[in-house]
Length: 626
Image 1: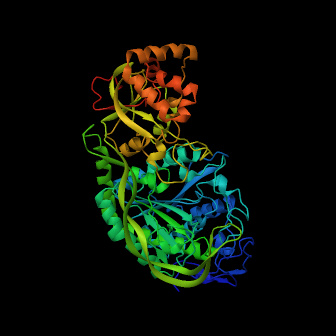
Image 2: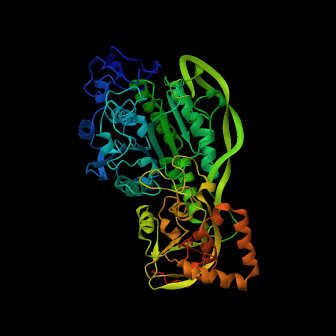
Image 3: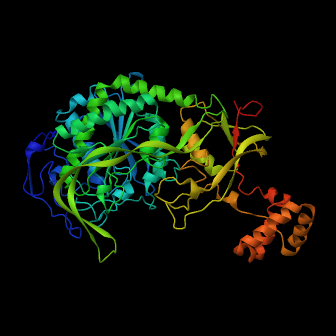
């Protein structure tokens, strides 16, 4: 069976499943047993040396990579791009055919850059060992040297390096090997793959600076699944929705996705060109659910950057060798495709950048911009290669229990397809953010969004939002209490409602003006529009605007209520109707008095729920630094 791995012929693994085979689910309370190997090649990777029973730790990983760098210094360069919270170096490995390691020079030469991120969830380190093997075969054994003909391969070995070193046999109960693996959270227990837009972790801030220095043409994020059991050992998905430029989406659908599926299948694995997310985990026959990547995820964030990106998910219950070699093959297939379609890819990315730079060209018009997408209601038949299973009522959980039998079950299932817009907005020419909202501005700065600062105080009528009906999540999610429900998809009903209003607003000197005539316009819009599923508002950066700071004593409000009802019979009738129809309101003295306070000029002065950011149709007349 073809493997594409240059030294596999020199490895004789005497136990464990072979390449491309499926194995029964391990007993989840047992760690995989170490394999016995006879290795005859000096360039076998640490994982190969262990017959895939183990993965190297941080020091051993970097030692092997530096050894390759020393052996091929004109083709490989290791470059630090930041530090983790615990002080470990964050590195990229740059692989170029001719020693050109400068991203600006590579872009001038029209050489596409592929950036692969590994171990963001550090228990899912398969991509790291796949990239190490692919690096070796590109520059040492040369069996994959052709993949560097035009493209440049850049990879992050261990993005969540702190989590990578929190190694244990008990980090992932639902994964078949290796013996020890890293942990999902970083040093402060943040999930880095929920941090892309809010950018709070030091790793995320370092990533943004590195990403914009390199501005890769194609991005890959390597993972290992949770979820159902099935025959596929490699699943992947590439976003192709209406929030992508049409040309990019068409190339993905017509060329990239079918091409990679064919390549992986031809190299000894079984690929699914969609992430397997069941409608009902307890009933696989109901089919596959709709997937959309929000900006909190790496691949969702890449939509805002205007770059195609692929989520790779190896199957958790396949043995480690099968998973690593499957990851190897899809990366090799992508590099082959990027070399072949280099000019097309570069042109598509340039067109995406121009589209983003023109977003503010028709400010406050009726043109709608989609902030969030949902399932459009359609289904498409999907030939699912699963396993036969039984369902029975569990005496333990009280729910239906699915038991897989590992006999092939090839069946056509409905897959939820099509998109509908669940949140949208019109676009301004620019936003203006009051200087005091430093944390909100700081996130945009971390993303390297272009901003100007006002040189003097300015007041004017601006379009903004007044928001009400908010609900916050009680248990923390990524260290916050957001207005969305954790991992659930965007739910506008939970978020409440924000209505556009015009308000006379004052902005101090040093306020940030963000024009939508730049490549990162989509980043600014998704962060600053309240209804964006990962906006600053949704993540709780503006929670204080919903706090009432001024109140009235009961004896004062008693007088106020009587005066207001005497002057306004309609208000009196509204109050009496609410008392008669709402028992909870009628029995709450505070709520009854607050009814009048909220309708008074004193409450309006509190500006409760008034969004502080202005939407500008023009920046003319605003004192902005040149």
